[in-house]
Image (cartoon, rainbow, N blue to C red; front, top):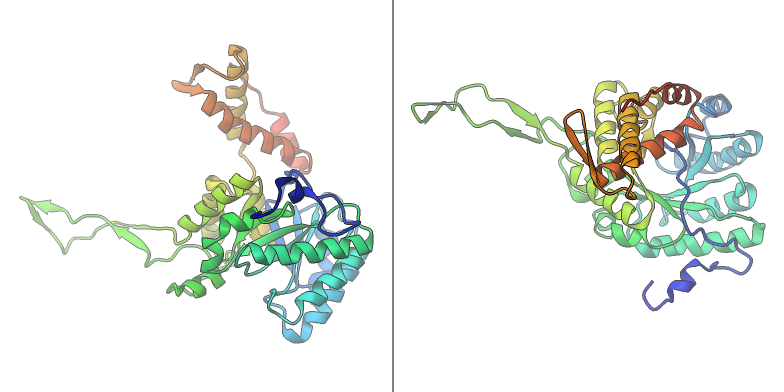
Amino acid sequence: MSGKSAKDFFRPLAVGAPEPLREIPARPSRAIHFFDPSNEKMAAKVPDMVGTVDVLLGNLEDAVKADNKVAARQGLVQIAKGTSFGPTQLWTRINALDSPWVLDDLTTLVPEIGDRLDVIMVPKVQGAEDIHYVDRILAQLEAKAGLERPILVHAILETARGVANVEEICGASPRMQGISLGPADLAADRRMKTTRVGGGHPGYLVRDDPPRTDGVANLEATRATYLQDLWHYTIARMVDACAMHGIYPYYGPFGDITDVVACEDQFRNAFLLGCVGAWSLHPKQIAIANKVFSPSVEDVRHARRVVAAMAALGGGGTGAVMLDGKMEDDASLKQCLVMVELAEQLAKIDPVLEQQYAAIEVDA
């Protein structure tokens, strides 16, 4: 925004383009499920997945061979035109901005299915300039296509420079919907010594001190070790940047499809840190993400109890109460309202959760 009036920030970047959003809608997106539109078997399953997953994403970038790029793009157009998505959002991940396919991605998708696309995911974002480039092109294409709402933009953190610039990326455009961690490319760019796609690593650990007898350390004794999270710093920084700018942070892919236990652990870590969802590379990961990124019945019950108790106090959310031997105050109330509001949003799109949350009884 350097050299630019704050008022100009919310003006369309092209004559006739839709008005930029002042606030990004809080739409549930627990799982962003990737599919290859050039894969006929995978594409055929898309209509049946509507309503079972919050976001379906037609992938045009990594995992799509160069020879299949055009087929994937056209396949996504056909799927979007032939499918009623209802409560499920339709996203796409375009090719990288330095690729020979990205301009055709944008100039094809926006005129053809821009009215159906909710979010465009941009890979390997380095800085605000990448978002500015996409922002201007989208405005021009939206104006030409006569779209009535702006297509939102989601960036992937896949480079060290992108992480260093994450705050300016988040604030680069009113279109910014959120950011995802891209652990594989980021690991390569940082020269990290791991070949895993997301998750922990058994070599990244801390070890207990050796036991001592009469002050002498027994260095031969077995000592407990504790696995550390390679991605904790990056996720925490991403969450802060997103919260600062009113957009949403996501965990990216967990590459080991078979290890559902570790996948659930990693997703839960991200949820507790503030992420709102994660990528799904296989249908079994959808169920994991839907479970982890939905507040439990116990958490919602406690949150509602705190909200009710604080409301009974009066005073506009100030003061403190004791519940189950614990002090709850206005800071506790703010934490609990996050849970309550998320539960209300999810209940609108998930009949099972709606029933579970509706059955909660709140005691004093």
